[in-house]
Amino acid sequence: MLERLNQAMAHIEDNLDRDVDVKQLARIAGSSEYHFRRMFSALAGIPLSEYVRRRRLTRAASEVLSGHGSLLDIAVRWGYGSNEAFARAFKGMHGIGPQEARRTGRALQSQQVLRFKLIVEGSASMEYRIVERDAFRVVGRGTRVPLVHLGMNPAIVEFVKGIGMPTLSRMKELADGEPGGIVALTGNQEGNEEGDHLDYFHGVVTSREAPEDMETVTVPKHTWAVFRSEGPFPETIQFMWRDVYTQWFPSNSYESVEGPSMLHTEIDGDVARAELWVPVTS
Image (cartoon, rainbow, N blue to C red):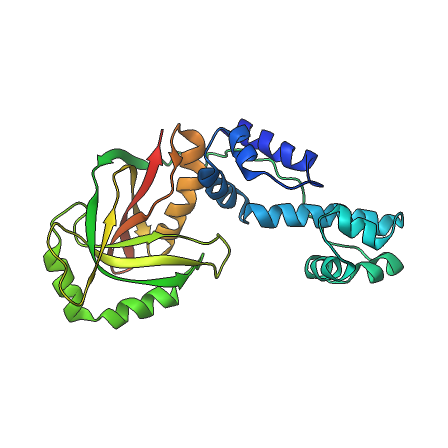
């Protein structure tokens, strides 16, 4: 998988001055477009679109500093329709505009070409199982929240507080499916940058009807990779997501598919026991 992913990275580099066809990149990597985007973001730490933008502005910067060609020609070659749009993007990455950069020869930022490799640290193993699951229902309450990579997500904390303990207790009484207890469903994520929004649903897996003050989400039939982890809260949960995409997927024949992920967490003091369900295909 990593070898094919690196072939896709080489294709990006060879075609930086053209529109990037993500479907073509996914075919080169041997995966779906959805999985390719998720895998890239997890491994690179930035979305694919941002990487491509930064590589183009890196190549553009070398041409600006060389003094050859007009700034408009450089702007158009790297996908900008005007000097103004190019100058804004250039300054956003390099801290100064292209005219000033050319005049002063000041050092600029550089986005290096990425290649990926899998590093196995220590002898830790990841516990997982594959589960075939028919469609099921989750009853609870939902909202839309910004993405937070590290630490507690304040929007989720406030949302759950707003539900209130009496309602949460009634939710738990409805649970009669796997996993038991309260689960967090997340999906429809607009991107992987801090602050991008996603759907968040707090509820229980149940066959019962939803009370009038709760909503129902139907989760379609999927094959699920189910991961278990235990350790300090909240790092264990966040590192679990990271390790699934940067270590488990590159080492296995499965790939993620579009659909909600599901997390069940039990917290005892500073220790979290988590079970993460990710929809997959082989």
